[in-house]
Length: 227
Image (cartoon, rainbow, N blue to C red; front, side):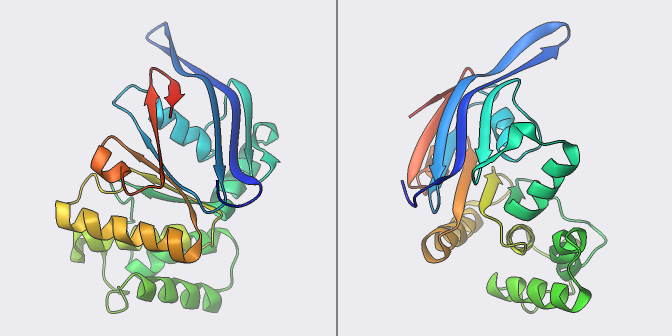
């Protein structure tokens, strides 16, 4: 494990949902540590619990039982506003469907987390533009998502996820809507972010060939995590 203290620590995490009056045990006693600078892939089929785990790691949900510490902070003790602040400050998200604002330029999409963080306009512009340049999109800052390819849209999404300088990047099926060549390109970017910047990355995927890009692979099955 890289680093001294873990960025992520889960201990005995359980999560149960009620679905049509039936209890669904989505997570069954999950223990997990991810150190600073690690690149971890979590694989699993539909219904394995990996999406529920992603929601908890991303502070979009909280466990019914067990503990979650992010950078040493006990997430289970935080209210909704505090969780939202953690998401905006400490976690970058990349999704399969990009989740870009359709009528907003690449630059404005990337600036959005900084708006919520109260960063001044000039600094927002500078940081967002610099991140787009790093993603190879310096000539596309004024383009709308509809004017960009799928790979370019995912690079915008990556720039948006990174502009707040998060401690953790959560990538949920980031290549799911991309062709093979573009998928390899995005995975190469993730690899560079991990190796050159030391960014901690947790990648959720159902594809073994995608998971193989991570330094450590784990598998979800029936709500349990297996090495």
